[in-house]
Image: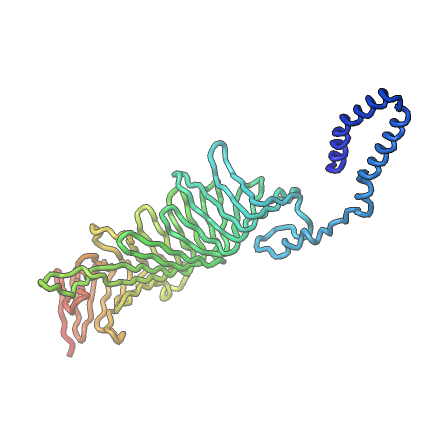
Length: 390
């Protein structure tokens, strides 16, 4: 088409000199001779500029479909028809899923493939924006994604990184978003790693098998094999300043909780830890560890809010057993009770519901017992008994 266009353009440029030659021919009575010569020149130019000579021998070769499928053979996404060529492929793909006038999610991809028969879109190197009901956005990035045009559920595969509106992040190998329910799901067959930083130099790290996030309620469910660690900075109560005033020097305090299940209420910054009720009773304990402390109980509540008004940051419930240890990890004293409150400000543990404390050869009982973690002091309220070993 280009060559033909150039040829027509060259003929259009010749009209001026053709008219000049005809005028001269009429003036000098050489019309027949010049017309014959002019005809010869025009025919020669057509032959010289004819595109047929350029096109001969350049028959297009058929493209092997396997070349198009070559990039599709290795795929992390399931259910992709790799045995045939997709009907469409799009570079720098963008797609927005909506329900009425409300945006559900937006997908950006380096490349996407459309399979018309299945109404399936398979995308590579993706970033997804999940729109929360409150207007905030959850950001998801991964190696691949797929969705059905008829359902709008979005699945992301491979090195999936999710960033929630409050800055909390998770990593997994798979994620599914259900826009109609506003839920983010990771099945228990996949490990999830989470990390977040709270105001006041407080850090949250967790591992679990599976995760469910309800955008409407801001509740996260960690499905199985939970290991949750809170690292916070507290004032050093033992270090004195030059004028005898306590300096607020940061000392890290690590609390690690292991359980079968965890429910995180992000709005309240509260985490509930429980065990699988199908387990044997002797195995159904939540384990809590801190520097020089080990504890077990049936349930644990952890408040990871770093507010100075917080009274108890951790509460252990039912069949509580606490072991305090020295620098050599030897047990120095232990206590039991129906409930243990870890006081935020006084650095004490408050044992309630038939508490008992065993230290050296002494046993202390009472309605409420306070274990001072900085010293060996044990306070008893409404003491019932005190016995001294022999």
